[in-house]
Amino acid sequence: RNKEDAYTLFSITYFVTLFRYTYDYFSQTSKGLFDFIKVSRKYNPITKDLAKYLSIFLKYIKLVKELTEFIVPIIASSILLDNYPLDTYIFKPKDMFRTLYRDVFY
Image (cartoon, rainbow, N blue to C red; front, side, top):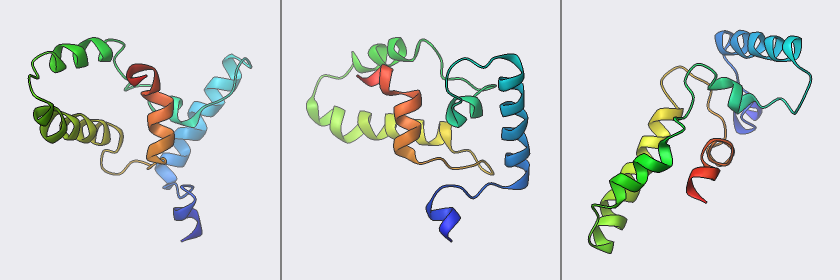
């Protein structure tokens, strides 16, 4: 239970995959810090046009109620579903958001 609480409970499949990505990273470069969250999205990166897509989506909102009752839950659930598909490792949501989405939302 402690590993689960600390978000360090990896399945063997996920551990092997992360280990392979870690090996590839350090065998190709030694610059910068290694980031497990970024490397976990190596083959499924966040689109570089996310901010553009969100602004197009948001421009159709006319009322604050639409924003708070519809748009915010849709965006939040989309982010969660995109980052936590079945049978994958669950990083802390706060860390995932900071690493992958901070630049888009701030």
